[in-house]
Figure 1 (cartoon, rainbow, N blue to C red):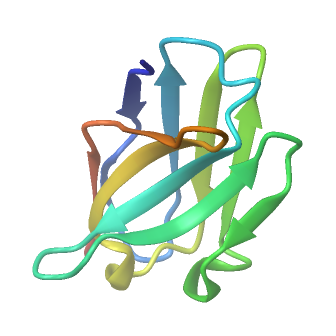
Figure 2: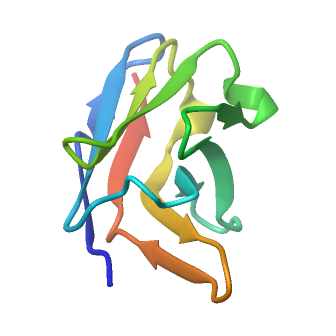
Length: 118
């Protein structure tokens, strides 16, 4: 069982930056994918970015060049640096851990609100 706790959300003006952090309760060293999802009101939850155990990132097209995901397998944390924020980025952001293998395990944080508005 992995507990994930997000922090760093808030209100920011368009063009601003925020850094989200996710702290895991156990080692994430062997977790295949650590990621960030988001869900805006009335919309489905969508993948924002994920990063593999060996540090390879993947981003949805709309955030490429603006967001950067990173993981620290020693501190058991995952971060999402968000720059040039747009109103369309407004959503609840969720940390996710996905472990693949003989069994599939998936864990979610409680979410943190990001609001981009002037």
